[in-house]
Length: 438
Image (cartoon, rainbow, N blue to C red; front, side, top):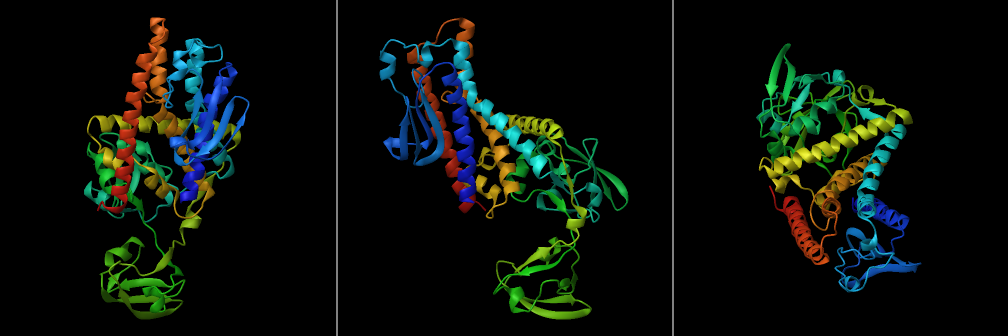
């Protein structure tokens, strides 16, 4: 998990800073430092100098930076401002060139996200479960039941749009949009179900980790965990569980609903043609100790393959939808319709997305998503972020004169304080949500 997060951030931060670097060098601006991660208090893992630039890796993995000569940035270097502007400095260049330099990082992140998404579609394809193949309907998780879904419901449309791929029934637009409307087939009759306007907030509080609906699947026992209750009771790979304490078991989600902590329960097992009865001691963790074999899923699932010509516009469209989702989510947070404590993810929560095993398909998917999110976040009009610099440069271009350097210095200080406070909140919230929140 840690390795995946570090690698993803190293790729994204390095290329983000390269965007600024390339743009600056293209206009003859000197770049004094290029660092992956921060060399806070002058501490660094290693560095070397080539030409006018010092390249290195800092010890604090919270980002990276390029120190551009003649620019008021996070280095807060006031000495350079006390000397006359030099031809190779940022401050001596016209505003349109400085604007391009400031947009270089987010542009690279946006393009990188599209490239990764597009190449993933070419190499891996789009792996999905056709909605028509969800033969047993859905399993309504606690949040799903709270808003009106029932086990066995079959999704037909969302907001009037037919659902061809099951994941479309759970896409962010449906979660964030007020008044999302589902048409479902329930016991042969079509029923209309409208999500409440506060569903996005409910989702971040109750369904962020598990969701609200999932496909309902039959199963048999896969690999058995060593020293688990299943292993101690001689359950075997390939067994079917028919019932637990006389309660019939058909779908995988019914297992957890039937378990009772710290007790011995009677499992009826089908092994080949034989029906067996097993007494299984369940601990307080409600774990039997096997991986489910969702044996029908492989035949149901599909992979849509893309040519490069088809993948690029699809990657661009998915990136656009992701940015739209971010804008909507931030709007809801500012309006008080979503709890930021449940909505903002720090490195620990991001690590959970990557998972504890290395999966390149998942790795590149989340890396592309984070790249697009970084592009969006860096464009927020906060001093010290690229977006803050862009706002000041646009003001300068409108009023046709540079903003005072002292003003820019103060704004940089304010922006860094805002970012530090936001970072403390996100990290603290990350730790709280991981270890203390119920």
